[in-house]
Image (cartoon, rainbow, N blue to C red; front, top):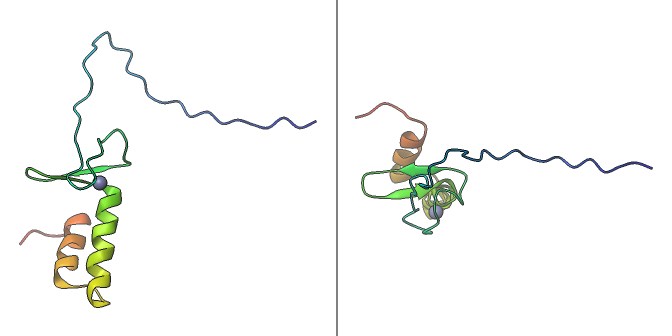
Length: 84
Ligand SMILES: [Zn+2]
C-alpha cells in the first residue's frame, strides 16, 4: 500500500520570548493584514497587497483594452524602473 506523502511546510514560528507581534500592515484596499496576503507593497500612507495590485493593474489595462499611461506607470513602479 502506498502511503500518501504529506508535505508539511515549516512555518517560521518566532520562538522569541517576546510576545510582541510583528508589525502589521493592512492593505488599504482589501483591509487584509500582511499576514494574510502573499506580499504587501508599502507606499506613503497606503499599502496595497499583491492581489489588489494585480486587480488594479488588470483594471487599468482592461480599461482601454491596452496598457494605459497610468498602468504603465504602475508597471514601471512594480518593476523598479528608473525614477523620473
Ligand atoms: Zn489588498
